[in-house]
Length: 335
Image 1: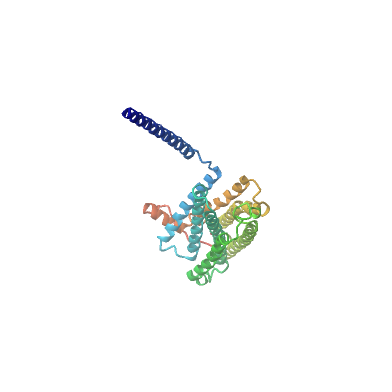
Image 2 (image 1 turned 90 degrees about the vertical axis):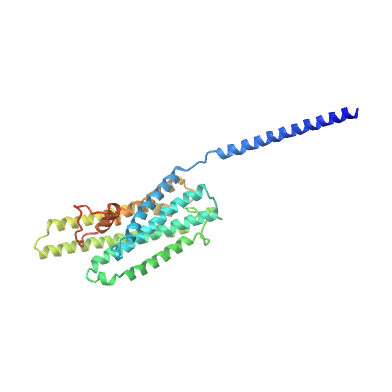
């Protein structure tokens, strides 16, 4: 009797244990299914962000090539090439900033990451625009003070100007991290969150002033180029066809440079002045993308067109110089 009762209790305990085991595995299976489904849920990626990330990658690659050529070519150490190198470095940082911004949005979402990304982009693009102004001033001085340019514009002086320029731009980039942001007050946000509307307005007005200065300097460059052409014509009793063509080409190049710069940056500057965070994001992307494209175009305008740079690029790529490649002396019309 006792043996039978003990056997019955043992069978009951085994059945209960088996049932609990089955329930545990069933519950675990349901939990695993839930986690797997959440993990496999597709992440919605903004196509505009993808375009900006691809643009940033292209910017970084182009300007890395420019910096590599300038670094490994000892002959490219004149003030003009130092300024071009500074511009390429600023655009390189801008490209990396666009890539980091995409990474932070979809992989590392935090306020600190947002502030770092915004600060890097502000500093990089500010430095890019300021370097364009510095290059314009350098070109103007090379024509206005042609006789004393090479003695006044020393390498040390150029580096001093760049240190001041970069210190100013880095300070602008640090402002969001130092509290000048709208993370705690969304009503003060501009179209470029987390930048406040007041900061965006200051940056936009500063850009418009820089653009006005560049336009004035390029007009003066055109006047000086035509004056030099007229002086040569008086000395030789006529203007040679080649010099007239060179002057016309120089003016056309200046027009293209200025028009490209205006097309890329003025839409964003004007939109930042009149809009805020309540406006549709598509308008922000439509104005930001042309501004980033300016950093794509800069290497072609300021580096790849230069004969000295082209020579170094040919040597670096294939170890030779084409037989039809010639380094003609630069004239006052070459801008």
